[in-house]
Length: 281
Ligand code: SF4
Image 1 (cartoon, rainbow, N blue to C red):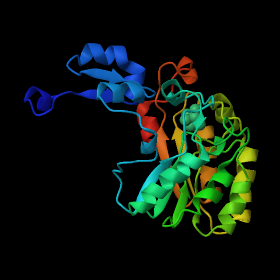
Image 2 (tube, protein in one colour; image 1 turned 30 degrees about the vertical axis):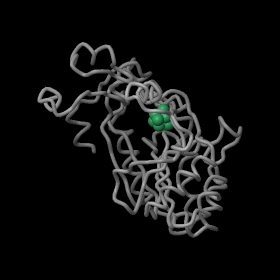
Image 3 (cartoon, rainbow, N blue to C red; image 1 turned 90 degrees about the vertical axis):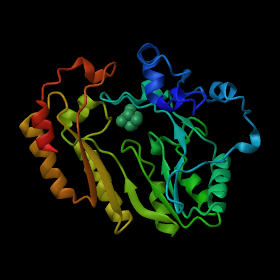
């Protein structure tokens, strides 16, 4: 805002999740922002900038990552009901981007020197269900490996429930698809998984991970976990720790539970003390 006051910047627009969720509050608290836009208001933002939504611009990107890699967002939004998560409130229902548009985007990125694509979405494994009426991540990968210049494709943010196993075949067959999977699992105790509304159990998750290790030898598996979820007891936490030891993840991140308003879990009592959560991580 300082740059605007100094006359160096003409207008300040704010866009993204925060603006989607808290627009009226932000308008009150920071009134000198010219306009706030939600996550689906790109056309209005372009209009405010006097720009045009041209078809030829599909796939054009200004990347902020190092030149060798880029994130490729294959879908927006999420249809899952995870109790702790506010993302569907801000990003809306799952909407897959068509394969042909993603191939165009990948080609343009490759032409700009990108060698590695990191595929992302709120829920990567749901890809295609809305658009093609089937989970279509494997077919998307088969199309992306044909893009000249792309040498590595890495999968992030896979959801365990309904994981499309044909992806593992493509991973084995196509050298460009890294033997790497980021799959946030959040917890393993059945009590907590049920309360989190993850649609899976300890037994099913363990079976899935064993299938990964069997089908794709030397696969690198990365996961993220939440500790301090409402109702989590010492036993639940010890069960999680024991299971992590057993599964031997190559990479693991741990987050403390955050009580988000308007989520299902917000109705529960946030009963694990903050210090306990932090120590557990
Ligand atoms: S945690 Fe992930 S899968 Fe679950 S609702 Fe949030 S974005 Fe969707």
